Structures are given as structure tokens and as C-alpha cells.
Image (cartoon, rainbow, N blue to C red; front, side):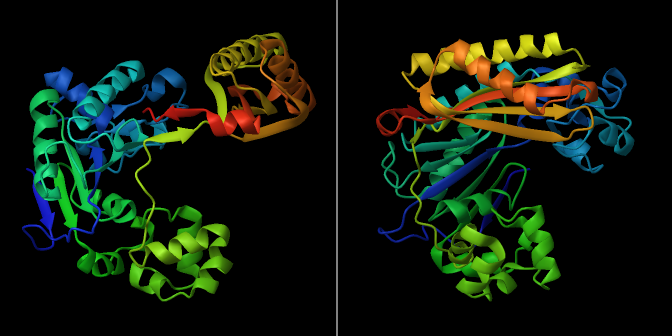
Length: 373
């Protein structure tokens, strides 16, 4: 049942306030599978290969709300998910298909505004201050958008509505699934104050542990820290945390981004123990990176190699070059050199990745790419 979490309102904004929506698709991958396969509806669906197929090494992409009731969540091991929910239905992901559905969602977004900033395949910010329907009510637009997605794609989403990105993101998590939460400026501080610090966007697991060690458990207690204390505890991110728990976030909804790196990686199963097979994968990855940067007329000066062993230990190594490169042969040469210097095939390799970054500054400033998700 759809919930609307509104803390007052017909239209709680002044003309000067921005109107930002954060749209978050509900259990996106699992919901698509339940939509396409009616026999899965109402059942605990886990998007991952069954642990019996992978010797327990798989990872959960997402889980339906029925599975979440058993404690299953994204990024946990498939083995742990099976132990929590042995009756769960494990479904292999169809990631290229999920991307197609994501593009359909974005097409609907564009009916409302061109100011769209995707955060991932299943969530995005929309600035609807000035929208294509010329409707002043952000709440009405959120309801209309939510209804359109449900009617046309048979999927649900949750929407946070507020005057900045930070609070809109917090709001979308408040009533899930299929909820709408509106937080106007005058209610922002009260809303933030009662949130557990682990539910505040931008506060990760380590920061949460650090705050708990300091006896800080809520947004209100976090807001009591001075700017200097935030800098001491969180480093360069401290200023952002200090401002945002006070309801301040002036970041615009960005419709473009500057490409800072181009990379590709692949997960390997069964694991690789053979040096020649590892070299073959590095060639493939380097060739793909070269194709991307050549198409965009980019040259980079840093090659990064990422490798993950069978025990999930992840390593990154990089080399800085005097001259920028873009050709496949050069990228592969340096990626292979990094592997030869730092890799160990006897440990079993489950992931390899190659990235080219630190592009020539003139190109870096000139080339702006549309945000995609």
C-alpha cells in the first residue's frame, strides 16, 4: 500500500525554494523479476546465483521485500542469504535487461524535467523547480510520476521531496516501498534530529562506529559537534557533514559530468591460477579501455590495476607516466607490468580490472559526457 509521509501541506515551499525529487526504485532487480514472472510475486526473491552453484562465493545484488523480512540484503554473500532464508528463490541477474528497464524509467523522468542526475541504475535526483508541466506543487508531481511509472512499467518507486538533494535522499528512504515523503525547509532540522546516524546519507559504517564510540547516535547529537570537531573526526568530508545536518546543501542537480577515468573490470569464476590466462584477461580489458578512450579522444597518464583474490582481498596498484597514452599496446604493457610486480596467481584471482585516468587537462576540461545509469 502506498504511503505518503507529509509533514504538513498543500504546498510547503516559497517561490525561492528549489524543488528536488529523489526517486528510488523499490527492490529494482527483484521487482522486475516478480513483474515478469507472476509465480514469483509475494515470494522471497534473491538476485544471486544459488550458493550451491558457486560453492557459496556469490553475492546478493538485491532482494525482494519478502526476502528482506528474513534479514537478506544487497552485498551480503549468497551463502549467508541462504542461511537466513533457505526458502528464498535465487534468480541469476539479467543486468543488461535491467539497464534497458532503467532507461525506460529515465525516459519517463524526461517528461517532467531535463534536470536529471542519476546516482545509479535505480535512483536519480530530479530538479522540478521549473518543470515541463508548469506545475508548482512538487508533491503533485511526485504523485503523478510515481503513478506513471506504476501504470506504464508496473514497477513501484519511493520518492523524497525537499528543497535540496541531501534531504530529498533521506526522505525517499523514510517510507518504503512505494512511499512519498515531503520535507519542507521548516521541518528539515526536526526530521534530521531524530534519525539514527547510520541512516544519514554520507555516514558510512566506519564513521558510524566512530560516532558511536563518541556517544553520538542521532542526528541531533551529531549536529551538536562544532565545525572544528567535524573536521577532526571526518577530515575533508567534515565540512559537508557539518552543513548537511543543519539542512544546508547547495549542490545543484548535475546533468553532466566530466569523465575522470575510463576502466573495465570482470569477475572471474572459476578463479584463475594460470599466468597466461590472467594475461589474456588483461589484454581484453586493456583493449576495451583503449577503445573507449580513443572514441572520446582522451589520453591518460595513470594506469591502475585492480585485482581481487579468492579470499576477497582486494588490491589496487598504479603507475604514473611522463607522457599520456591511449593505445591498447601501451595500456596493456603497463597493466601487465603492474601484475608482474604485485600479483600472485597462486592465491587464485576472482576479479581483474584496468583503468586509465588523469587525462590531459585540456581534454579533461573540454569533454563533458551525459550522465548515464
